[in-house]
Image 1 (spheres, rainbow, N blue to C red):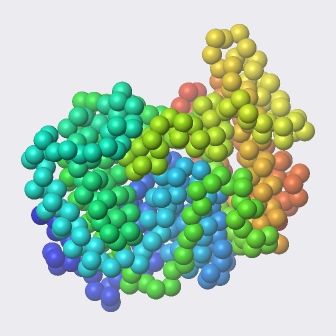
Image 2 (image 1 turned 180 degrees about the vertical axis):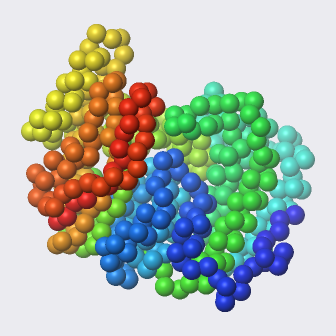
Image 3 (image 1 turned 45 degrees about the vertical axis):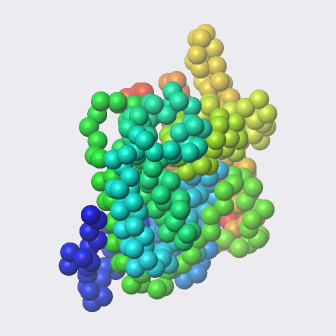
Length: 422
């Protein structure tokens, strides 16, 4: 049976409650659902303080991911708006920034779910589970992710959770379900998507139970503070930001955008997209991919035309031509030069879109790393600064965040913070 911290005498008194800074740095709320390559929670706190953002300042995250910026901004009293083309990520970020939950009711519902699941799991092979992600997700792909037994367990628990009437609690439990399913799957992200069907994993129910208790315990601490901000999530590309935000309304932007590294992020979230009913077929997946910034060759479509915006930037064209020279005699890599052009074209549109939305003297920070594509070094930060300056941003500079190494080449790659000022 589930045991929450309060029942074990582990709850902290208000006198010894952790500070907001402690909650943020220890990963409270953030850890409900971690995403590949997200940046440190502490970075957002540091920048909110460094740029002296006042309470209720509007912070925008153009690439929300799993909500790192939004959660930290809310902790420190800022309001936030997050964009993401992937509906799974906007869902995750929305759940992670919804803290007004009746924890007594939450516990009661969790106990009811556990009793129903335990009562039915022994007969799962004989249950009629209806239609859902087991029918929609391609069978070959589904079997790559989950064992046949785990597929039935997950579907049973999802069926039970979906009957919960309280929408906020139902969504929170669906997040816990998705994370437990992912953690119990065959997948490993390294940073691509690889499957290990013989690796040892914790039991699915144990993973789910740990997650729902973690969420409860985090909220019990967060709710002792009442000065946090609120977030709004928008399931759309940030390249359409002007449709949602007023001119001169944004106090601060900080984001870690996609890199031109050929990672296709819907592939890494494919299981959860089907599991939580965001897609029912590959056409649905393709529609999501069409809205994403093209840091991968798999996100480029016939009608993609963002490359039109970088024709006047000689350094971007030069890099693209260099990649072409490296791949022109091969039977692979023909689309990498176009990926470079489309990626920088999308990032140009992104910076242009937000220029008018920022308040005068407001800052736009991008945590981004230089890359190598087929042996060609791409100075991503310098190229973004060149494009930003052409759009009217001033005092443009970069500061070193950390050093990485390319997975394909023994070349040190700086990851830096590009700082732009309107």
